[in-house]
Figure (cartoon, one colour):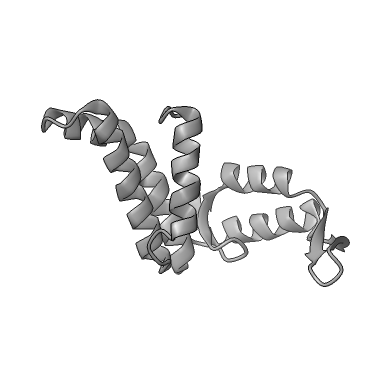
Length: 144
């Protein structure tokens, strides 16, 4: 499997050739950056798809080598893993006697705590709690 993936320093993740091609297709060749001083988006050029493709071809021409994932990318991958296991975790809680709605709330709390902890974010602020409660009130606690 190591021959099928490579660590791509540009994005800080391991990718397959398919993943890399999807990234290239989505990245386009132009973008804009918000200049907060004047509150306007300024055009900026990005790396062309052709240059990215050359980079990927070079990357896959070399043997597999380890790369270091940033703490942010590790947190994202961990959250994705937790989300993939959402249903089994909720069912596990329900098997322990927790009501379905409460099991869903527990999972969300676990996910939030994981993300906050791995990214070094503070606990939920009063404003965040207020907005979360308003959202739950508007949507009746239902997920979209």
